[in-house]
Length: 216
Image (tube, rainbow, N blue to C red; front, side, top):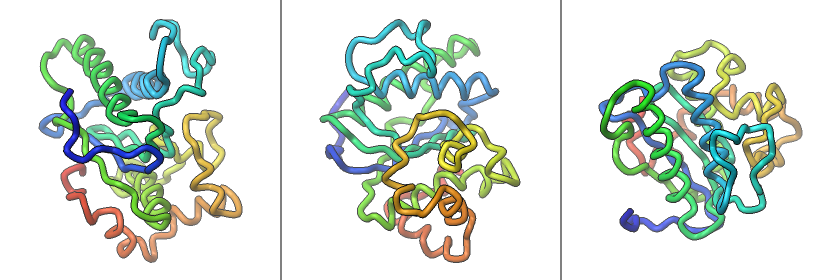
């Protein structure tokens, strides 16, 4: 894979997203979402690993001290995905997204008897430039299912890190501390996410480098 024009920097946080080619749905059912989550966990770790078929998110077979990225939050939508991630090693984000995308595309194409790319070219990445942007980006990512009309209550959407953030999921996918340590409790974070009084203004902080409508 050729080098990115905008090299991604270790220790920095990025908003990463991509969508299905021609805006097609890349997740057709709950098993597709589960498969993608499993693949996320598998490829965020560097080095030798057990066979993918032997790995489950709960069997602790991976050496998590060898992570190449740190997933802060995520949201999987029917035709696209969002990540807020921190790069831990040189090329970590590119390797993570490349292996995740290639593996899931192979699975999807075999399962649904199709050929060709599943995702729309190279993933988009936006550098998080301030703590304010970091906080509001986490809110933006978590609000996607509500804003898009998929659910009326964010607690009902299982394919994002929001349930993990507010204590409704036992999953430990995300490095939540950078966000939650800035709130008194998970309930305070929940109020922050759901309080949209100033959301229109804050959204511009996130969108200033990205035509977000492409992903709706």
